[in-house]
Amino acid sequence: MSQYPSVAPGQSTFKLNTGAEIPVVGLGTWQSPPGEVAKAVEAAIKAGYRHIDAAWIYGNEEEVGQGIKASGVARSELFVTTKIWGTYHRQPEACLDESLQKLGLEYVDLVLVHWPVPLEKRGDEKIPLNPDGSRALDRDWTPEQTWEQMEKLPATGKAKAIGVSNWSVPYLERLLAKAKTVPAANQVELHPFLPQHELVKFCQSKGILMQAYSPLGSSGGPVLQDELVQSIAKAHSADPAQVVVSWAAQRGVVALPKSVTPSRIETNHKLITLTDDEMLKLNELHQQEGKSIRLVSPNWGVDLEW
Figure 1: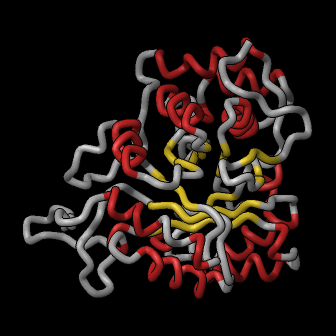
Figure 2 (figure 1 turned 45 degrees about the vertical axis):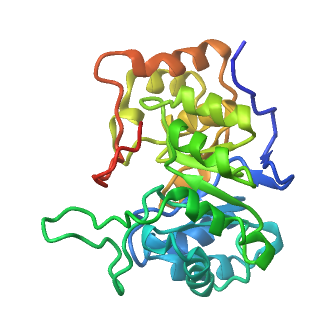
């Protein structure tokens, strides 16, 4: 049997520690080309998606909002996430306000601390740099202090739940030692080449829902081209993307595949049921030589203890 909770046939949502339902599959919008995001979001919602993942730093929240409006689906039927950028760690509500204005929404269902890395606030600079080219970190502020500010957001009505993104076990342990509110979610890079077994187990033990960004690895990347992934897809008459999205879901992990192609958006949303043997093989795939890969690792100049 699988060591992770499975998605029952037809199951479309997981439950956050707040009691709210969150769709198992959502549309990711990171790195989606300008001019294509609104149509992708509209197409996704019309294809049955009810979960859209956004972020202030993506620079496309206006288009995300346009797509939501064009879909014609009621706001109450959607689950929308945004994220607080590093330059706003001292004032997350200000960042949330900007995102809400761009999205054209009164609230989000979930807001995450994008990285546990406070950055200096220098005007409109998104990634402030020191003279030597290194990231300008706000060394007088801690991620735990950021979380104290985050804990105030639900009472404003602007965010129904709060969580984190790109937090490792040691970072989460330090946060939980002081937190009044347990994060509802932790969104990280997660795919068969980076399964994050320890982190998934830790978060699930604490009631923190895991979310996978880049669940496909990357566009045209090695994960979807992998021989095992391809063979499982063939056995199910499915696309390789459906295999890795379903693998995440059967581990109790929300998957956020990104695409701007309507046909792929539609198939990415259709889960298949993998066998225990297929799950085991995918869980162990990263152990093969050359198949343990982290694709997103900005040089923050701080040890994130991955």
